[in-house]
Amino acid sequence: MRGLGWARTLRGRVLGVVAVAVLANLAALAFEVEQFRRIGGAVETVNEAWLPLARLTARMEAQVERGGDDDARMEDLLDDARAAVLRGEVLAHTAEELAGLRAAEAQLEDVAAAHGAGGDDTGRLLDEVRQLGALAEARVAALSQNAANAQQRAVRVSLILAALGVPLGAVLLWLTGTALRPVRTLTQQVRRLEAGERPGPVDTGGDDEVGALARAFDAMARAVDERDQQVRAASAQLRQVLDSLNVAVALVEGGRVRVANPAATALWALSEGLPLPDALRALGEGRQERVVVERTEDVFVAPFGDSGRILVGEDVTDRLRDRERLVRSERLALVGQLLAQVTHEVRNPLNAMSLHAELLADELRGAEQAALVATVVDEIRRLEAVTERYLDLARRRAPELVAEDPVAMVRSVVALEEERLRRLSVTVEVDAPPCGEVEFDGNVLRRALLNLLRNAAEAGAHRVVVQVRRGGGQVEFVVRDDGPGMEPATAGRVFEPFYSTKARGTGLGLAVTRQGIEDLGGQILVESAVGEGTTFRIRVPDPGGAPRPA
Image 1 (cartoon, rainbow, N blue to C red):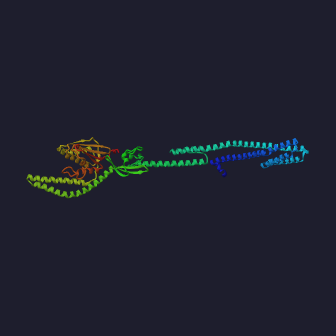
Image 2 (cartoon, helix red, strand yellow):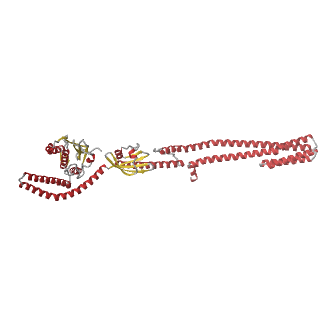
Image 3 (cartoon, helix red, strand yellow):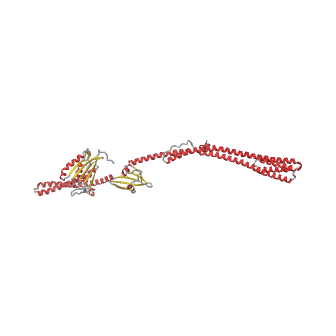
């Protein structure tokens, strides 16, 4: 069975059929060549020996029948006949031809012997000549018949070869078609695989080379499919990781966004497949800060591939604000500690001075002296108020959250300051619909609202509107006055410690107010323009409210 292993392969079968066809053609060609060689040899022998011998025999017969006594002529004819027989013996290809020529040579000797006997035995000479002629004619006829038979055999072999060629060609075509059918299917599946589609199985049902190739292709297709599944799973996992990041990540190739996670869409309004905005395209490589309206972005740009770029960005506005708040808190804490020490040293002498000034006022009877002592007492009390502010800045107590109605709290603050504001010709309106109780530090907010109301009155405002809004996970207090307003440079510094536009101001009121609001996790903002009044917005978290939309 091992010797027939070649028959199991397509190459072996095709080569076997081709070898059989070639061998058959070679055998037929050899046979035909042999037959034509024999025909050619016979024709050459006939042309060079037997036909000349037949013609010479006819001349001898005519010579004898005329009864001529020209011995020289007869001798010439005999010599020519002998030469023809010798040429035939040289050209003879078969033993049969050689035997015939030798028989003719013996007959020529008999003719020569009869001729040598003289004219007494003419009948014998004529018989010998005629026998030689009959031998020549018989050999010509026999050689002609042999040539015809050889030609017929060659024709039969050609017909047999042609008859064999048809089934051999059919077998070869069948083998070729059988081989090409799976190759065509295999080609189609390769094109599907090249196009990114999932190819189907290629079943040839054989163990030949095409079958092995088909099985190898199926194994390769399964490996490619498994690899694609792994790549898709890894891509999906990577995409899930990108989508879960709060940092904006975008891949740009050819000026178009190829990949953008939701954070990038929210931060830069990017869409996959669309061109990158010009503002982002103009960014250079490396890390940089980008200010957009009221937002500050930290953007890192890195090259990707030949012409791509990766953009990683984050909104660091809150981070910078927190950092600024931390620095400010640390600075205020340091200042507060210093002021607490100074205040501690100053308050005791001030208390003693205030007590003695009051005792001195009781002893004095003159109005002028009493007025002077009253002025001293007022200034001492003002210094005590200043030191109290310093102590507020230094205390930094933890927030105390208590459930309270913010609208009622605002109304109570307005009611507390109503008389004082009325004397300054300031009216206060509260525009606040009921919003329920909220957990916040009321003491901090009360001090903040009192400070804002007093600042508005001292700035020259005549009408103040206080609004309360609850929603989006926060409570907002808006204090809007119709005062003279502030320059942008002034509005930008109102929360700085020790900065004040009032002649006798300490510059600590709004600084302490902002510090308290920020300790609650909120913020205070100012909006002002010259001639258009000033608006302060206080926003504090609402633990029981819905979160603010992003």
